[in-house]
Length: 378
Image (cartoon, rainbow, N blue to C red; front, side, top):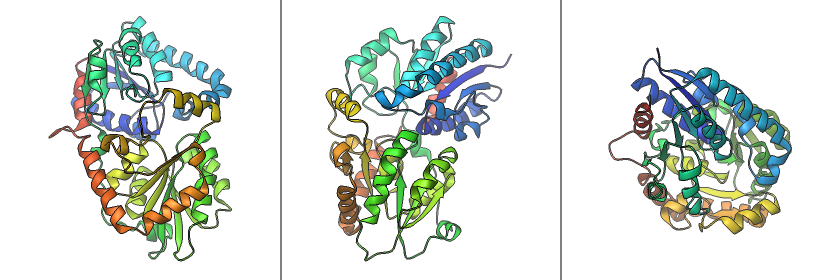
């Protein structure tokens, strides 16, 4: 009988990790059967998603409330699918609010659980590490950051730093991206990344485009927005009155090509900051949530920085504009300052390399390391 893996990712960053992981798992276990929830990159590896991953791509305490009924429906549906599929191991990727509820159910069925991406206890409350170790049913934790395992192993939870799969991406060489999408060779191309959740796009995209519209008129500006296909209908009406040429791209390959052709990026805080750093793109990070969500987060968060690039370097390499500072005036001034300062850009790229090097397991593919640990459970 073939071995079975049930795998869950709840958002775009998790789909990327899941796609890389499934590729390695299939190489190490050619006959495995796969079921679960994921996006286009996991589906490209043969996964038939139980339902749209977009149903789980929600963030913010009060932004979440209108969707609670559907989330509970999806939890019930996922549990039923796991019971019917009877996997040899459950692999959950990030999205702890959803995944840990499923993990507890899997343990009731005596199914081992491997969770990929450690909760950021170092950013919130270290005490959550003990809760995860003792109350949440996880057999092994796969960590993306080198300093994370000790937070959990001291409480008896097996944890391994596996490295970050971002370091496995093969960057595209010279492409015909600008010609293909009608971007002028002379234009300053700005990559705009307002997030992969609908609430993020609704809050941030207008601000980002207003910031670009305020840039000095001494240069030709064009904009590219890499996004997911299901978000295009949401984005298109928001860019109609942008005042600049806007191209929307939807594939992974186009996203990386856009990165490599962009002079600078304006992005929502998240995993994309690491992707931009890996591609060597100067960037400005911004984020905004409801006032109450921000107040609660401010009381809990213990780190000085939001961007992982800054956390890994322990300094403000990437400018961050959060909440009230996330406004068109501030963002526009910072974009202009970076675009006109080549020395600043060079320093930023050097710090990028230091951050990315910290995410590597020397001589090993991070996805292969993660897959080998998961394979031990099947």
